[in-house]
Image 1: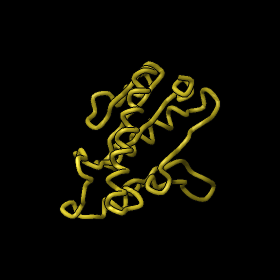
Image 2: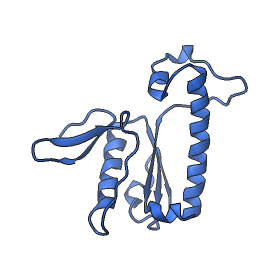
Image 3: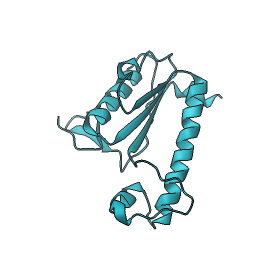
Length: 152
């Protein structure tokens, strides 16, 4: 099955493949019983996004001591966080980055990052005294065993 950029294959129904576009559905929650493949599905989704989207950067929070996400270790554009403390720091950094991007998007009178990215780089404007991000790559955060993180 060939996928377009920013598209994830979620499974197969009776009559068709079930897929989603992350620009339309930017948040996913995978839940289920222990031993039924949640981590396997998560690794599959990350692999698809990594291979099909060169403009994605990943923060993987793996609270199973890094065992589930070790296949991604050493890849460019991927950071793996193995403890609750590392995960909290990664999420705090993500919040700062999102706030900075939101200010820039708002300053350019755009509703979202997709609209902002349509503006040619030489026509984008930035708030005074604003640190200009190096890039506006799509930022993917994946958390395996999020419950442990939520308890902090």
